[in-house]
Image (cartoon, rainbow, N blue to C red):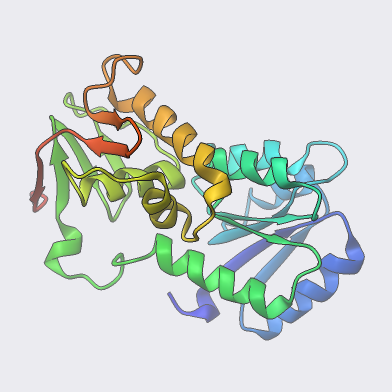
Length: 245
């Protein structure tokens, strides 16, 4: 994915930050659309599909966290939160509901660009190189995951929607079947940064994923908790090439 193709939606009610930041990002080669609040962002999404959303948490009306949930769950869009220093709890909640990263205001625009590139590399890793290994699907306990389309199907073939964060968590577990993955390792793989303060974000994403793939999420058989250690995928995983039909 080249930067000339990257579309960004910048959502922030502070024009004094939003407008110069949009100009800077445009000079960096991004295609930037601005929105001053959640309602304007939703309207923009009717005819503009960004590769990534830059989202302020504190906005009048619908706040950034509510919009973040919609973007990650209903639209499967990656999100970088723009937060104030005093919004640590909101940052944690944002990561729990699927945000990919955050930057704290005031921030250096070059740092934000680096974060954008990092998130886009992470979500697009292996998606465009066309080799057989990345075309192969994961099969486990009757389930099938197409990593290119991010399409998860249950044993009956019914597609089960998953968010970007849930997808990355599932891939991390599928890449290490039977291995105990501690929270720091999972967090690094899923969020792309080491941040021990957000252990709970991993736990919440595991709980959400369990509700989708376990017969009984209160008695999980596939994603097992290893007390004091982390989580383990207790299933045999195969990589299979998709059929042409």
